[in-house]
Length: 587
Ligand code: AMP
Image (cartoon, rainbow, N blue to C red; front, side, top):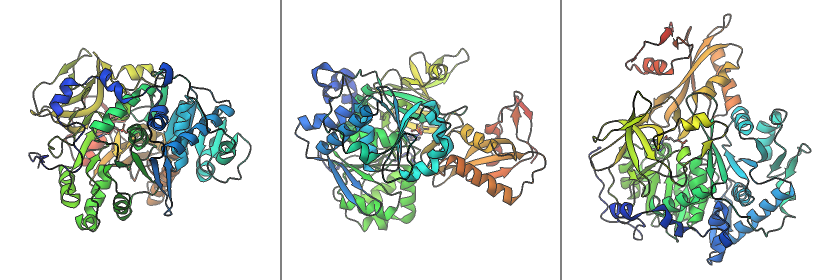
């Protein structure tokens, strides 16, 4: 299958923005790409919300539909660029009315409601920093991130507030304002109703000069150890969104675009909000969770032309069969892309069978801020490959050497770590409050991604795996330490190690190995109690799906649980170097 090539001989739709990869790479410069942006008037710098919304009014796109929102219960709401400009202005004014200052953090915790989009863009206009949180997070991930990120404002819904946030108010002393979208009986404590703030707020707002290096978004991501990392992004990153929207997603002015990712994760913000709006297309937002029939209906009815989705969803659709797709008529659909986890070669080819189009895999991560490696509309696809680096991005396969430096792997098809030459516009500018952790990602002018990959003789990159212990489940990056910490809170738990177990549908499922304190019985009732405890603390997206009891867990001499060994044993893989193993598990 890997040898197969999908030739781009007959393309549907307009001529691709990137019609010749090699020629574009040769002539591309970020400085020249600046023409894709307007910049704030009078040399006022660059503000993401201005590029995404306000400037379109100047270019006669005010009446064009910016967001087409499809609600869970069949509602349909369209927000034109002009309406989005007005509402985001109102929100910026509302924030200023509350005394919220530029640089302060606005956290957003809600499902895919129109207000989420308004709040995010309005906050950027007010030069506040936005952190979107996944609404399926439990109280613990919310509290950790809000504490680390110094949340001053939270925008949420009444249900999420009652269930997940209210009980955290004591802990979150810095959280001064909670803006609730909908009716709530929760009063006082800095709780404001969305309508009460928005209705009196002026729809006019002038964005103050914004330094392109000023912080725009703070996206939390997970590492192997310790707490989540707050990746700092800046307003100037929008240049990468303008370029990748055009080159990697091939967005043209008349496209109807749908990114299925939730804005609680970086794809749902960079490509579910910023890139499509910056490119001035109509952005479809679907509130409901995945359901194949609903998705096909959306593709057909809304005449989606460019679709950006993810491997777990594609595999679920594959399971239901191509016939369900073929029962729909989707003549407008012309480009399909996928991101977030390895896309099986079979899935790329299945796209051809079911939709008459291949899926175009692309690769990036929270830290890169935008797509870095991609399959392009005009370029042949090798199913299973992530494609080639974006014009303007220099990638390499490297090995770390003993002296702390790196060496390039020049031979094709040899595994190493994927590295990107610094800088590029959407590169993270720091891990909030963690300089040392940030610095460790960079060696000799290269950013080390933590992903293992190889490049073939034609320059295509192939994903091999992660160099660390983080878990990818249904496209969501999960830090084992966060899960272990939540389980350790339970009085029965003495030790815990958390790993990802390969799963044909969601990539990996989270599994915990638990050693109990004396006096506790490893029975079914306790297993269920621990699963329930983790789910309540962490939320369904992060909690383990499986727990196994062990009398002891393998540890290094310094007392660190050896997840690598737990995983090797669970999967029947070679156990590797055991020289640091101190105590062992007795099964
Ligand atoms: P996140 O920061 O949550 O977006 O996760 C980024 C990680 O997801 C990457 O470092 C990869 O491990 C994985 N990933 C993203 N895109 C792909 C892809 N196309 N193929 C394989 N893995 C991917």
